[in-house]
Length: 150
Image (cartoon, rainbow, N blue to C red; front, side, top):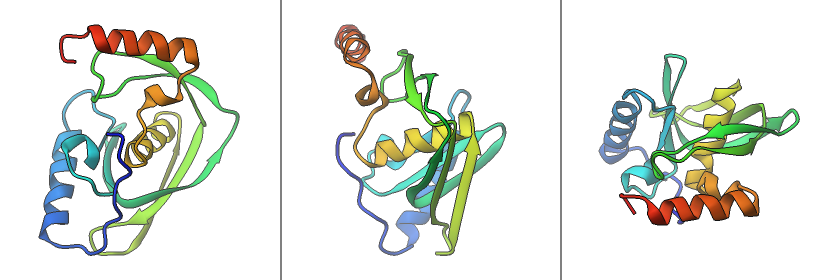
């Protein structure tokens, strides 16, 4: 989870299978997004499920963040059970490609913006805990160390 993911150089059966797995994974209740890194694949890809809109982006890059950053409650499948207020921009836009290799953009406000930032962070080797202030991060890491799954 701390490794920067590799760009997808060509779209093949492996990448198509990855997208199918990501989309299937994000359909489960309570999942706003899943990055390839979270399922053990070191490629730049993620899926999202926001307000019933399900999709994916290959080689995503954040191209726009706007508005005044605000604290929003955030959790993560990689650190289950933890929720901390995290600074996020209220609007985000990512560009990338789809399985046909065509350029796509995904953007949104609120939860969509948060998910785009969160999943792109995973592909850049970051967890949302890395964005917390010192005191909150210390508390979060203590919770991680004391958790049943650690």
